[in-house]
Amino acid sequence: MGALGAPGWSLGILLGAMVIVGSWISTWIYVRWANHHYDARLETLKKETAR
Amino acid sequence: MNAVLLQAATMPVTAPVAAAAPATAIGQPNTVAMAFFFLFIAVTLGITYWAARRTQTTEHFYAAGRSISAAQNGFALAGDYMSAASFLGIAGLVSTTGFDGLIYSTGWLVGWPVVLFLVAEPLRNLGKYTFADVVATRLRSTPVRMAAAYGTLSTVIFYLIAQMVGAGSLIKLMFGLSYETAVMIVGAAMIAYVLFGGMLATTWVQIVKAALLLGGAFALAMLVLAKFNMNPLALFAAASAKYGDAVLAPGKLVSNPFDTISLGMALMFGTAGLPHILMRFYTVPDARAARTSVFYATGLIGFFYLLTFVLGFGAMVLVGPDAIKAVDKGGNMAAPLLAEYLGGTPFLGFIAAVAFATILAVVAGLTLSGAAALSHDLWTSVVRDGKARPGEELKVARGATLVLGLIAVVLGIVFKGQNVAFMVSLAFAIAASANFPALVLSIFWRRCTTQGAVASMVIGTTATLVLIWLSPVVQVDILKHEGAWFALKNPAIFTIPGSFLVGIVVSLFTTDQAAAQGYDASVRDMIDGANAH
Image (cartoon, rainbow over all chains, first blue to last red; front, side):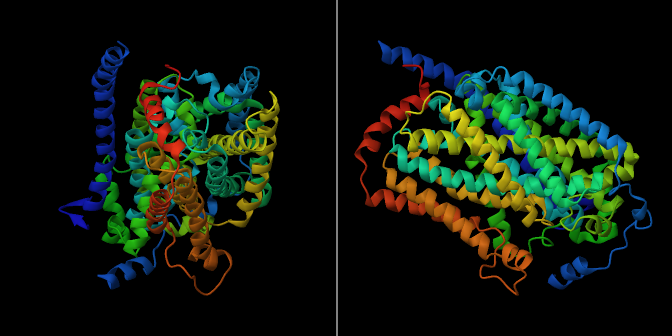
């Protein structure tokens, strides 16, 4: 987890920053999917079961 | 390897501005700081007054009339979350121990996807006020509420202590008041906010504060990077050149791997059990707004935590660990010292006012959720059996606010000198062991019984409190004993799985027919919204 080639880089710092960016991306993907697909499917399902 | 680390840790470090350290304005009353300070207090009191005129019902006091938009709630969630621990505590830990302090930055952020994927939408759709309301949906109300109040209040009190410690050091250093006086002033101010404004005022104070904190931290980080050609790598390289490669790798702060994993588990799973965060999902109109608000919050908080990388190493290189520890043993004053080094007294004043605003806002949110646990869960639902007179619950909530404020002030004085990020990690350990397992089991597991959920909450909370009491923090740092019974500083690695296990085993050995029968209806509510049918 020490130095990585270029001065100032370390595996620890790189992974730390990647965890934060990865969290952004995963929440973004989920919210997009839920707003576009999940909600629409839920509406259809509710209409079908209401009949 | 260990010898090298040890040597790096104990290596005498020559602080670059050691000569400049006596010139710090910290410790003397500071006009600019006071001006910012009172400006912020005036503005937020104005908000509180405006909100107080709209806070007439319980629904308004706890849930701001469910009128908060997704973006507003995202800012308010971020405001609630980015406490003194995030700003003062992480900067302090990184500047004095290097990379290990960043475990807090990443661990705390990972809590948000956990909240989003597991609890945000079910919570909103059930349409309740408190965490206990949710667990009690299909389980027997009275025992669940009593157990939940126990866990919630323990979490809130530990969280409050940390904020008090941060505020106390800050006010002491800014205005030259004694630590004890400073803690009492903060206590009085926060009680005033919550008593008169309720959730609507607290929400707006959070929004204003989130914007101020992000702006202040961003400006500070830019000033740091300006010294290093706007290149964070040059900053990290300077840190490792000065204090050894070890500051960029794990090992200095948490040398025991079990302690590291334990801390990480508390940070990751604590968020989904924090009563003041969970409470925010009831202030938005629907599930879509709830999930979108988590996305906003994750973005804002993640951005802030990336800044803490720069602030922490900036303070390490520019101010120096020795100078920081000389001012405050827990390292909590690293960010204000960095501000003074880069922008002089006016910038110090601004950053200190932002930090104070941060603390005040978080404390208000926490007190509110603690007051809700006492008045809504214990008084109205248990003592009055759900039949409190109108207005009575609000009175009890206000009394509870007063009591919680007093407890926080007293304990804030006891825990003087601890790092605030570390103190908050203990609150997260309680939340992750007391609330999170019961919440997940009751939402997702049909077989979960009242007895199982109650046992999980009671044993989870008690085990965490006992292990914190037996840990080196209390035994060695506070009680000054030779050693501690329990080696880990954070007990989450045992208490989170333990709490799940207790909940599962007790549920399997008991039967709760009403709970099993109510499961289908509660799942429908969680997916579809409780008010929809």
